[in-house]
Image (cartoon, rainbow, N blue to C red; front, side):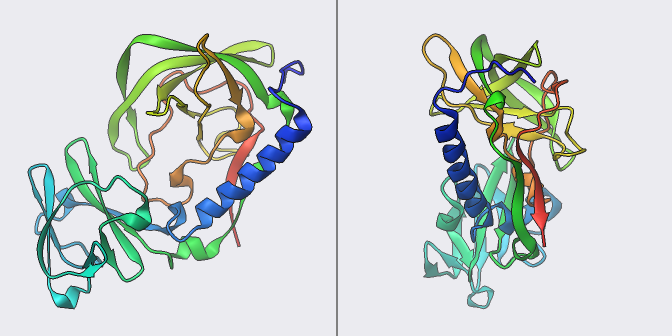
Length: 271
């Protein structure tokens, strides 16, 4: 690991910032509607009759909407009010706890991917949430906060990658970040988020061994000259590390680093 990477501010303050980030991240993951609470992603194509085992109501596709039918016995609420009859739904975009359909404390979230519809079931009383104890993470090390450069593509592109559920889906990419580690230049293909920040799905020499099989990285928006800090101390476990029902994309071609990234979040710890 190179020892001359420069941290954008004092390493002591950076270590405190990282500690605060890690504590907030753990609290978010462990929250009532964090990723640990997902107990199922139910694709309606698997339930053409509209009845999902364990999920109240009848759900059917109708063009670019879902139609939910329910009786009083189903015990559903829509927009916080007891619901009977029919309602047309679009994909939920906001926080999980603000999704339109609920069953007690459970939140039934409408999802759409590449023309297919699903209902996700988030339950604060999930076994995974009860078992969770911590996120194993390597303490902050300034050597892993690396100066990098963002190189946008001439035009955005989409690559097909396998997802955690075994289905291949499109992954949009807008450029790459280049940085040096262990004396070698590395690159990661990245997406650009609506706020300008970057998102990479990557693996490295620790993946599947001392770290989860792949991780996410979310660098801040690059400066006008393309400079960006590639802080691998903030490598994130993907949602599918916390629940099997997420459909996280695997790293695209070119995003498996030869270096061992012994930094950031490594694994979920259960008790």
